[in-house]
Image 1 (spheres, rainbow, N blue to C red):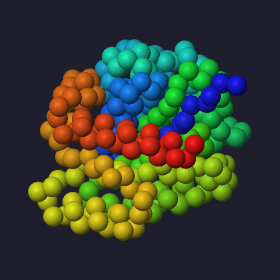
Image 2 (image 1 turned 180 degrees about the vertical axis):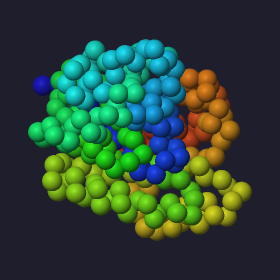
Image 3 (image 1 turned 120 degrees about the vertical axis):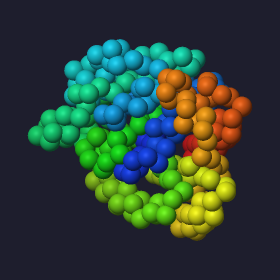
Length: 260
């Protein structure tokens, strides 16, 4: 029997926390160590698709069509400039999916059902969730084995995460009892700012070992890379952000080995 890929949803209902940046750069870092990786861009904004260089004109078949069963994952899948990394891009239609799925029977399982075929070529599937806890994110959680939560080092970081934890608990009890938090990654860390240290300490105190040792720094090169349609590891391999994402990938793989 073919080994199924591990599905990790990258989620935080708060925007601007480095969620998409983490999705594309973690995927690139995993591919760099010979893992076969698929990104599913389930955010209607489509930033993950743009961030790996997929033009809007190339997204005629996208994650919306996969979600509603009009296309298979293989039909929507595109190559990226990163060897071993493919993407199912987002499309503008995806913003209507929340409404369209409301009356669908077993609507929470739409994504999971489509992912149960054709994808055993991959080691990891990373789902870039929208910054909301609606039906698209619930579909991601039902389809996932685990959730990775990017958390920005800012004053209100812990306040919003309680809603996310409640949603995870609801999905676990109603649809996916094996769902776990793979880890929490601190993003946009500014070592010159005492607040970053205070937030990091609070998050580690609250979540303990769930928080990765790796911290993603606030880094200009990381911010610049998406405008060039490249993950930061292709844009500037030597910058602090690239090194951090390589460290994060090794931590994720280590946790995966322990969990297996």
